[in-house]
Image (cartoon, rainbow, N blue to C red; front, top):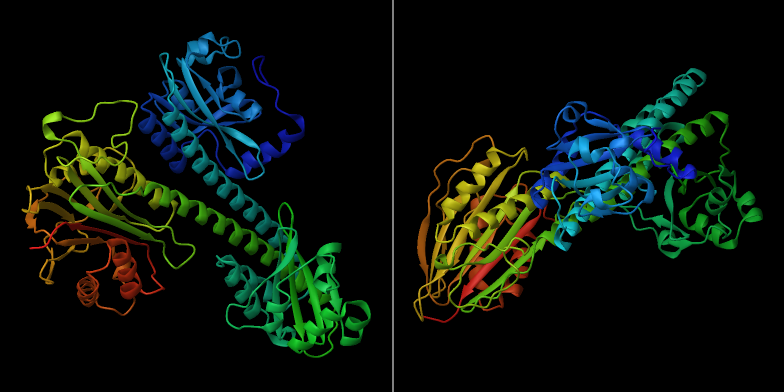
Length: 622
């Protein structure tokens, strides 16, 4: 460690460095980390942005924008050139308008050699709170960071930390897989003929939810060893909680859904003592455990059981229990096999819990991007976002509605404020609306969606007076120069007031998206079928067409994503017709209620994709 290196807390340094190693990242470019650095550079408009991971004697940059040679080629510096080490050591953000004037940093070689003047770094942490490095923005001149910039940087650091935590979990899983492989090789040599361990590895690797884990374990054990009951009990909030059978309602699991690890159940004892507990017969059960345990066994028709603790990478997870209707005492061979199955189950449980938490965070991120629609005199607006029924699906569906500046005023030039600081009640203002769908069902799709949504908004607001097709071309030109791997469909429309009782002029362009639906005041519906190709960065900008019609007073316009109409075995044209019929049938409802009714009636409760609906209604009746 060099003279200028900071001493990290000794009691956490070993765990921190092990977590760093499990990320698999070092002094080499990584697509995901490059994307985070790129987002920092674009959002904060800085010349240099880094994902910096602080190792024992150096900092490395798997994500990097704007760093000069020779550092750009090496993608690393000694700690003598690191401000990120101070973030890592303290575990707190470091925000400097001028690093040269701060006692902590004024002697750092990062200032003369890397050109660092202004610095803002946010901690990157693993699930245990170990600080692995910093997501930082760097300017080569004095800069006073705004609250919005620091908030954006904090949000990006949280997303980057989630990515790192997923990599660490994958590293744990790979490490555990290697250990299990060694154990399996030993078991297969000693217990020739058994195939259960291999099947367990194959089956449980694909489990993504806790219900799926239970189902796969239940169906996994076969042959003479096959139990009549398989239960999964997890330690949650200081109590044991049963994961209900996804395919059957069992009264015992309802009556004893939660209980203490100190209760008189053999499963509680297995967790409490961290060892396998066997119940060879009912007499043993009655003499060693509580009457509630005997009643639970009787209700399931069980006479014997094996209860195996599930050991996680950092803490006990719960217990798996296998029960038989006849007396059964597991021999050495069965114990070895079941212990291995419990190990695979523990890995699957950890993965499922982690995925559930990550998807929850992703859904929160996606919802946070979908802001409230503005208030516009003469228009009623409503939007609805519903996530996919599948828990592990995170989509790139979005909507946006923003009032447009008067072309005579020019673009908004406030560098410190958002382009649309909130609803503007101004009768002169026109409105831009967008509904789109980025390809994919993962965190990448959600983050790319946020960037495309922002770019569309910027393009619409920066040069007022142009039509939707020009805005779309601006987006496609930007995508040619960015490495977002972005593709999808969207409808972008501008709505301009025509004066009292004359309605509104609708101008739109469609990039491969399902057609908007127009409900006229007389109750007739019309598909706005005109459309062009989807957008894809490889396609570049190509001619887009503006289409135009007048929205009479009392008209309703509906934009939606394909999650509303796509269902297995259902024709899309029929689904669009059903949507149009439902739109007409419920036209008297307030728009917010109308959208909920459409989603329930057309998509039902089992949509395989996210659903976004955006509707506007012009005031008055003809």
